[in-house]
Length: 120
Length: 251
Ligand code: SF4
Ligand code: FES
Image (tube, rainbow over all chains, first blue to last red; front, top):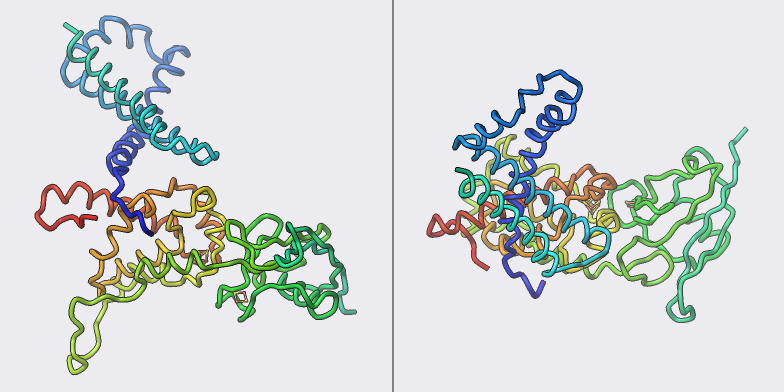
């Protein structure tokens, strides 16, 4: 009871929560489309062909959508791994936060770079 | 014909004055359909070894003092029955994550301090005079907190909680549920006094939503739900304090 410092966890928990929504609602659809529908021939191969993907990434709404899906699921995953480590008795503490949230941050910046800067 | 079966009960013994570490001792105990685990222990104390030490009081899942680990699961020993374990045997140990005082009795001091820290009573900025009558509450307002008021402080949830086991600075399931019980009460005005604890690493943020606490709770308090609701409250508090002059409660 002596310490009682305000935790900065709400930031990561919010990203984790938002990522959870994305992971549970969008990811299954993506897995179905890319992992099942396409290989099983339920979708025409051109549906996710280079030209269409290029157009998706090239449009601002498409790029934003991809950015949200990729970055938030990353934050979600990294938060879960960090806490699961603690659950199995590995208390990584600040180092864990730096490594895992650092990875999510780098992933987010890289995604933003490729989607919004490097595309032409 | 009365039903007279017998079952082996293996009990953890520890006497800090003579033992360097705990050991197990097995007793053979007769039982019938109605014999609770607690009655099995009382049989041992009355007939086999009077020095066996454990706590109980009400024998009806109300007082919360008889919690033990039964085959590794935190249970109220008055609410678990020997017949459920037959023909196997029972292994009874003191509640996990607490220091042992003697045999099956644990030291609850840490929890009692945490309980006090959440200020589990109704706080009013100003009491209204008796002449103005009672504080009224609608059934909906009562439903907001009623479930969390059923806690009997049995500590099963603390034995179930891996986070409390890893670091007992964590305030833990029951104390946080009781904190929520008062914060969610329409008559209470003490939220700002409790939020610094909620917001801290030792408050709700020590929880990773394992959920075992809610599974073992004998009173359907659902502490995991109380903690998670306060993660939402703490998150709002965290961000809203930047927006409103008195929105957040600073630590
Ligand atoms: S929340 Fe449930 S398990 Fe925990 S102390 Fe209260 S009654 Fe016992
Ligand atoms: S003896 Fe009171 S709860 Fe079991």
